[in-house]
Image 1 (cartoon, one colour):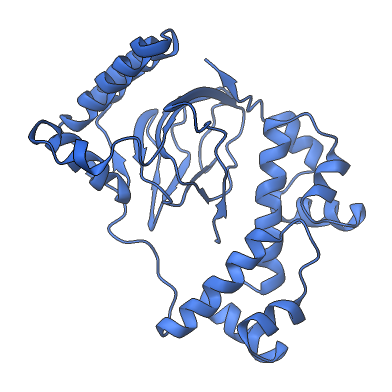
Image 2 (spheres, helix red, strand yellow; image 1 turned 90 degrees about the vertical axis):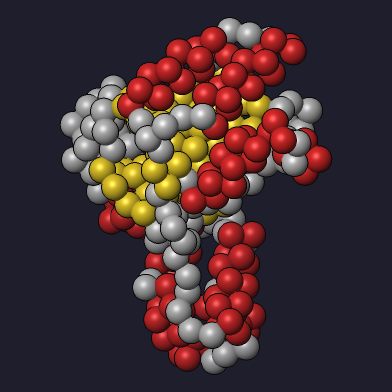
Length: 289
C-alpha cells in the first residue's frame, strides 16, 4: 500500500492544532505528514492500525504518538462499533529547536521526540490520563494553552510501559538507484494525481520502456502502476468525502477521475460501497474541540 502525503491545516502562526472526529466505519488511507501527531482512539476495539511497518489490532482505547513523515492509518478490521471517536493533537516538527532540546532539562522530551519517529504506543493508564488533559487543552487559549501542551508532553515523556511500533520503515527492494527511480515516480504521482498521469509519462521519468517499467514497478511496490495511481487518488477522494461537503462529482474530478462511470466502478471495487454510502457511513467531521 502506497501512503499519500497529507497536508495538515495547522497554520504556521499556531504551534498546535487539536480536533476530533467521529466514525461509524474506519477507512483511513495510509498517509503521512510533516507535523507530529498524538492520536487518541476511543471505542475502536478490533480496528486495524498501521504505523510504518507495524500492523496491529486496536484496543478499545489507545494513544499513539506519530513522528514526522511516518506513514500511518486505521481501517475497520474486526471493529463492530459504530461510534468511534478520534481526538488528534498536531504540532510542528520544529516546535522545539536544537538549543532547547539540548538543555539538560529537556533530555526526556528530546528522547520522546526521537522515539516518535518509530511510533509510540502508550499504556491504557497513560491514555486515560492524556484524554483528560486533551479536554483541558481544548478549553484553554493563549499562553495557557501552551502550558497545557507542555503538561501533555511532560506526561508522555515520563510515561512507563511504552512500546515502539515500527523498528524500521518498509524499504523498496533493489539497489539505491532502483529505489530512487521508484521514489521519483511515486513523488510525481503524488504531485500530479489531480491531472492525467500516463504510463508513458512515468516510464520516461524512470528512463525505461513502458513494458519494462510496468514489470519493474509491480516488482518493487506489489501493485501495478494504474492500481497505485487509483489508490493515491482514492485516498484523497475519501478524505474529501469525510471532511468536506463538496459534491461527489466535483471531488472525483478534483482528484483526477475524468469519467464518473469509471470513477464509481473503481470506488466500489476498491471500497466495497458507493461514494455516497461511504460518506453516509462516516461522520468524520474535522471540528475544533
